[in-house]
Image (cartoon, rainbow, N blue to C red; front, side):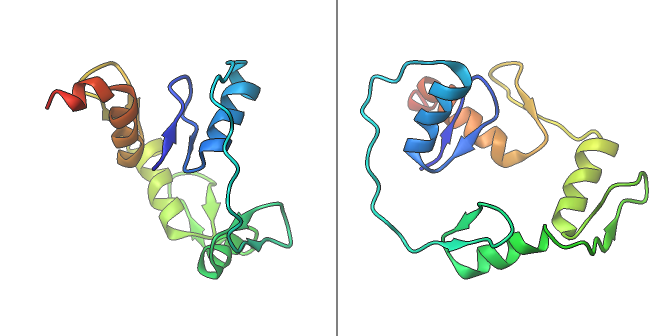
Length: 129
């Protein structure tokens, strides 16, 4: 399950992180008691405080710290160590691709954000389908 903040584009799969975000970023009181979480094995980045659930995610994360940025945007000076990041950059910045919600004025640069928006913001509409 994913939690989407209706005030900003914050998304998390962790309920505790979602409630902490609401409290700290938007000063929203949270009436529900924050759940305690079972400890799952974590892989910690040696460069920053990122924690991954598995080794493959940590390896992918480490590429972001690389000083070798082999994917260069042909339209501007943006460069990245990940091809996916470059594709997203070009689509959102240079091609101005936006995905609009057909139920409100919300737009986003990523389809997964739109799906989460519809799922959580328009949950009453989803139940009527």
